[in-house]
Length: 112
Length: 111
Image 1 (cartoon, rainbow over the protein chains, first blue to last red):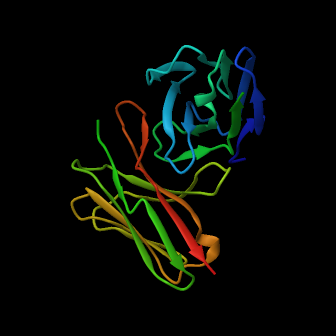
Image 2 (image 1 turned 180 degrees about the vertical axis):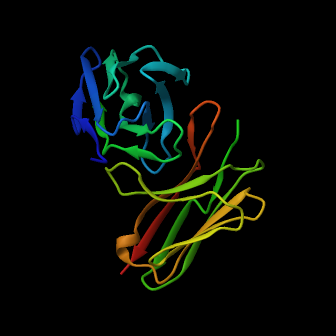
């Protein structure tokens, strides 16, 4: 199993809503990532988790709240988002000590 | 922070043409990865280059790692419409675990 599974694939939410994005992998990878990507731009790093602990927060606004409940799951909780937060949100995982990252298909988020 | 400069940013060519994408840094890489991303999908790893001077081939794609390990290139021979996508180089910062991408090259291959 070399898959990173993200749900939902598409999400439309209002600016007052609370929603969560989910990411799951069963490859035993202990490094997990959240990225934000705008059209025709590279992915921008948001958060890095290492052994279920947050190791990097790239100055992301607090309306994005990550959570790593166990070694297979990564969540991104969303609250009071702005229209400019609309983007493709990508999850990735990597074996600690390895160089190659595996990405999910992403969640296309639209904030209205 | 080590930065990657990728060029060109956009490329539109006819089917059958060849092309090269470049990825450069002022610092030495320990390794470099190339990814390809189709619209609405996540990036998919194509190759990792590790050794200076290394050349790797993946069908019509040839990847080179510079001798000084500061640059890399991706060459596509006889491009096909199925090669259309966003090509990204990336490096992993060993100390922090950050995976950082270049600006990307959007390739369009017209039939």
